[in-house]
Image (cartoon, rainbow, N blue to C red; front, side, top):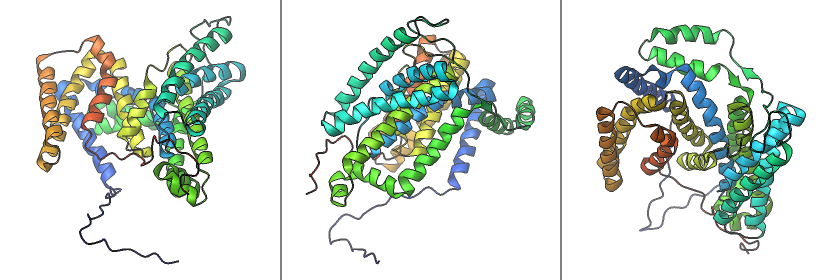
Length: 421
């Protein structure tokens, strides 16, 4: 089989291809990020902004966002916008509690995925079969899921010992994993406070000590998603449904079936994110436990450019801010203002020098100067602001991210069978 390459027509715009980031650039970027944080830690004197405890907490808070974002990736790669991630997470929190109470922790994991998948199935039925607007279906699912979880909690948890109409009894814990002998040695290095070296030790210790087994499973799901969607015929068919469903149908792909599979899997992953909140982050179901994390997971998916690695990095950023405001409060967030201000200035100057995004770059520079001045003129951040910090970070990242975002071409479009003929 031979492949012919057509020359571009005269006068046609040249076809540009995105350049793949070389592998060696990722460790270099990570080292640069640690160096910048180490400098900020030295200037501010706030060691907790990059301690092993903060890193571990950031990873724990990032996983629900990451699983929701990964669920959104599956759905939107198949062409279905999934605003209903929040509702699927809510169903997952209740399913995890119900399963764990009646069958143990692993049954809780299964219950979270099943309840989330049911939410995904409802969204697929509305959008794929009945052609309901994707946004309308997702918003409706969020509202219905909140009411359904509240009703089910009152029905099944209200009369249990330690439970009530708004929360479940304490749930059995999932096992934790650590690399033997590594935590103590890295802890000794971290306690010395050596510039950069102790920061690296804190990072490795936080990522390898006391990990919930569900965290490891979530990371494996990211690896599996990357392999399935980009390295298998099944994944190619799923992505073709999001790029050009009419063309996919002419090649024999059952577009409806693949959309159903992807959106149902999306719900299962988001439900697992809700189960993480109930079983790992808090050890009990509580009403309104998700706190809008489904929407932040959706933002992480957009920030990650609909790619598993990008979703994981975006979720890690949001989880870090979440953990920092919970552990350090106003003083820790205040120390981070210097880092945020410098990054915004760097992004803005880079965009201005490229002369392609002058307005966006100028706004970034102005906001960066304002953030640095706020750090200089204040000593702490009010509590109301610290609670809003993760959401504000979401807005800033989406507003000033310099990468070129490209969603699947047919994402959000209502597809009717036979359009390809």
